[in-house]
Length: 119
Image 1 (cartoon, rainbow, N blue to C red):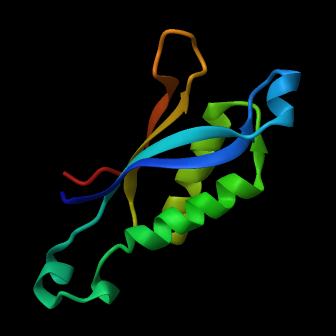
Image 2 (image 1 turned 60 degrees about the vertical axis):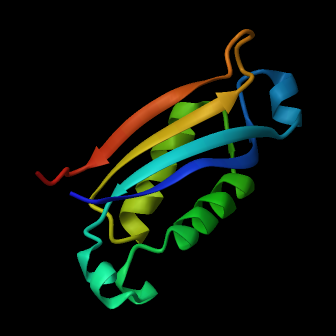
């Protein structure tokens, strides 16, 4: 099945468990793969027939900026739910990273898959 993707979407939000983290905004990074059959869009060359990745990105940016989380797990789960509920997507893989959270690493985070993966 075809996939539409967004890579390294960086958004500022309040995230973390420590008191100092609750007082600042930190960057999270999202990689998102969404199952979507692109054949109709490829044939018509019309935005109405595709999964509008800009609309997905804008929705996630809005949600992440307007909310606060302690755990990347909670943020990832809610982002996945938004995409599955509000867009024509049946399956997705979402990687949510928190750059600089662990000394010596470029990022830490979670990768989740949700929905029904067509074969």
